[in-house]
Amino acid sequence: MNSNLYENLIANLMYLRKDKGFTAGRLRIARTLLGILGGSNQDFVDLKTRFVSAINSLPDKTAANLLLAAYALTPKYADITPLALRRKVFGQAIGLKPDAIAKHENAAINELAILLLTARYTMSPLPFSSNVIPHNAALQEYVEVSTVVKDRLWQTTKDVHKIISLVDEIGWLEISTDIPAKVISTCAASVETQTNSNGRVHSFYFDKPIKRGQDTLLSYVSLPDEELASQADLVLIEETRSFHEPALAAKFSITFFGEQPSIIWQYDHLTAYERPGKPTREGLIEVVGFDDGDNLNDCYEAEDIEFESGLADGDGYFGGTATANFTDLYGGMFSGVAWRW
Image 1 (cartoon, rainbow, N blue to C red):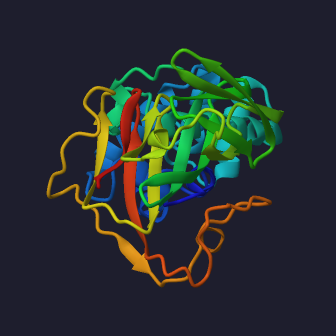
Image 2 (tube, rainbow, N blue to C red; image 1 turned 180 degrees about the horizontal axis):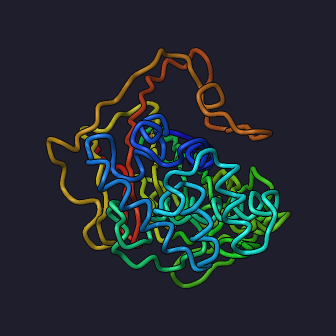
């Protein structure tokens, strides 16, 4: 999973404006952008058309024209090399010096990167481009969910979300759940929890608001709430998330101590009523075991948190981990891992 997708894309976009601009040979080197536009098996004309479509989808038309010039994508600038000369010609047309043009280019590239990642432009190749994005506040570059289960009972879960802001400023985010859990923030955000008839809402308030195009990590650990959770509530048969904000990639890891499930499978893009679906041959997951004597604190790291699980070195508990990876999750649909005891 690429944890620097946004940064790599920005670097690619900065690189491609140099020298002769957006050419087939230079695009092959810009691997992140190439993949986002559809991949190396696509015809260059199609890739170029998508790139121009994304630029033209920028709301600021001056910024769009500036980038078309920077990447040498219009007849007027196609034969002008190097970039400095294209900036000079464009700057003379709108009354700005090359240094000012460069600053405007950088800002426009940040906007273009968001458009490319969310795939919200006419010629986009990505699956969720034609779907409504409900909240439209953030893009999740990746999500990691790590859960520990001991003898059928849920012990703890760690969530990590790398989030890119799509609006002027994000000051807080909400996570809703029907699990009777208490949440501990492990990032630069405080958390407040409210209970309602449908479950719990965990509100995370960032120390500093996330500005448009900036990214941050939202991470937290969930533990059973002893006052609300009965033992029956903690018998876990799936780990799932509903992706209202689109996620480019997600990874689920469930570690089982003691009793192991009879069958484990992954599913994605199911409604709340459809989940967890039925296991299919393609969706089956194998458990990767590890040696006896490992305990929760050895295999599951979290700052300043110790798990009173009763598992200690020498207990002889067998452990195994099931892992599932997903891409392009969106639309409020559920994806995750399920199992039977």
